[in-house]
Image 1: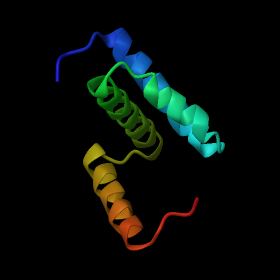
Image 2: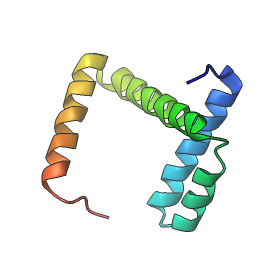
Image 3: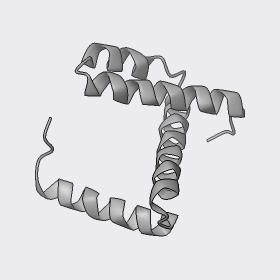
Image 4: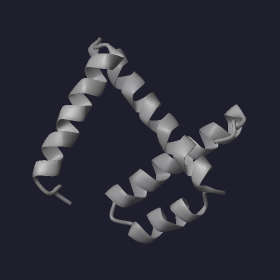
Length: 88
């Protein structure tokens, strides 16, 4: 993966947030359009990775938990979710 300039990384993160927002409001077509708007797979990966890091940082700031504790808790939630289908 090549390094991206900070501006494009944040643009990619904003696009990733848009994908999630569109999906949550039931606009699957809009989510697909936003996914297709990423210039390549590397940009998509960077965008979603930066979005996840920013979201975890927000939670860490609010809860006072360490990042390690948050990631461990998230991993447990993911494991539990694989045992039951997600609610749509």
